[in-house]
Image 1 (cartoon, helix red, strand yellow):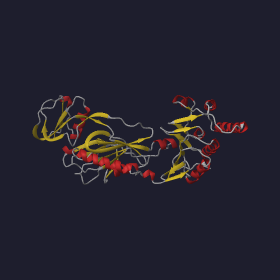
Image 2 (image 1 turned 135 degrees about the vertical axis):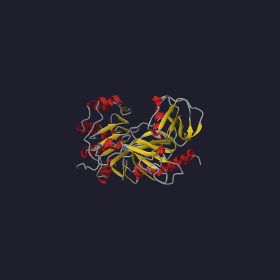
Image 3 (image 1 turned 30 degrees about the vertical axis):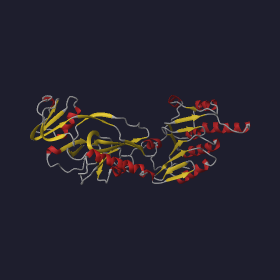
Image 4 (image 1 turned 90 degrees about the vertical axis):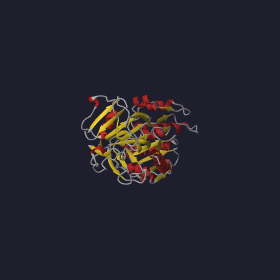
Length: 431
């Protein structure tokens, strides 16, 4: 089977595994009315839905079940005012952070809950208006307004927000613009705490013709002409970084952009052998945010050694027909767009014992004491270079501005550049 078709099969298997519901982060969900949290991460409670007459009690049940709660993620149309104020009071007392993700909204009574956060951030929409009631009891309405003003004042709510709220009729909704969010200082930074704090009350050697991203995994090459060198930047496990609750939440991956024929080599954290690309992606997810990307070698001829390469960063993009790569995207990251670049595919565009005579860019464009990988990458990075010939015995790299007539010549490696456009084969949500 051609390697590209094989890669597509692997990619589709990966997509199928994800679409069937596999996600290690969703081991179990605890639900309390509109509130929920994942058992794998009890620090984040989500409000999704209307605030009804039982919501305040359900929120306290969620807090009791999740003693490590630090963040309340909001997506609600609002609802019962008095219940929202009770929830907001609990948020304030527990010093929780509040966050409205991109694409979500917090409207009407939900806004009281948002304003209670010790740290708060709007990436989605925050909307306010006057309270409404089916009753004509003026005294009751005034008492409710008094409760709202008293509570919002405790949360250091900007006066402009309250003015906007009481000026907007109940039948309308004022959604704060990004300019208003900045001017009214609706976003607020809190004191960063670690996730387990309780709240009171470098080179990489690979083989040029071998699998993609074989960093730190291939034993010494049998000959110098088969060695490939990239760059690595492992992350020290001893590093401790204090993040706020919102920052920690925003770093968690929400989507995977999957590419076929793209190798991300370098920046490897570790490598391992996996049964398929789905298992490779799962291994990356299980690294608690340290792994940002992966490359899977889909070559069926490679039956030993690592085929899954887990990365601290995206590494260097390179074309490789047997590679399937994934980039993890956080909630703040935009969906990836297509990009084009010159490639010399190490599986499809390198030719052993072939010389491309003539067309040299000149002595200044040649490289002495080079490796095949360095020669290949130098040609890719040179806009004038369309091909190269590497002389093994002399370790010389000759970059070419024109492709001559190929000749058989022992001890030569030649490569021809082409331009490719890469776009995600699929962007998979992890919700």
